[in-house]
Length: 326
Image (cartoon, rainbow, N blue to C red):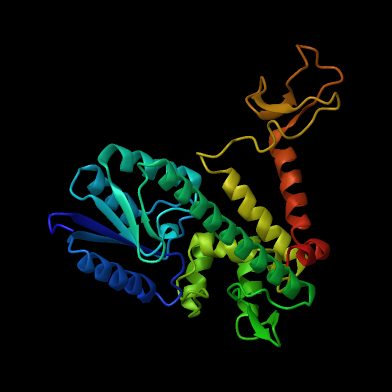
């Protein structure tokens, strides 16, 4: 091969739990060896570490590689395997379009060369993509089956241990060192403390999330709204804390003013919608009453929302629901 031939390398790994990038490093070394053996000029190396090609998430390295190839700066795209490039049909179609417009060839360390400018190359690419997608689906099925099996045995399924709990004999149980803070956190929110204030109180007590971060508004919300928290906090306090959280979300100026528009039903079977009565009060009224008040809903929106929020909050501490969601 002529040394004038130019190549770019793309490496990717879906999961890098240790954050060391060793998977993409091994791919890079193998790809660089292939480029050197063929006598090509290596233009650039692109990588996406800890990003799946199946999830649909944007891959900055992949996008940059395609942009460079699209500009005509290289003729070969080198990867460890085609499943590093695509696992979805939509991604393959985009790659085919690029290869046909710019006469780019795909070269892999483990699956050989692919010319997407030919019918046979397209067939091979489609088959390899289908196999890759099937492997992802089978892996997902195995993971879900293993998770369900652990849950059925009463064991922790393997996700991060939530704050306030510890793992004992493969089962989640209250952590005596942190469970009490969850109860106090709920009490503070229930009595009207802001979520930010509750988070600052946790920081003043030297408490951090399971990832070692400060308790932000989001973190406080996640702790109090997760189903398992019902095992750490008494039902009445937790229901009130959750109602406070839900009501504050409803007060967000960017959020809907009416929680139940299009959800709650009038006795006639039609959905209600939010409105303002002649006294300037927010109400829910039937959207199909056509000027006829009799037999159609017209209720105070604030009272209806409070009623709904409290019932949602109490439902979230229902032991049966907690068990089902664990």
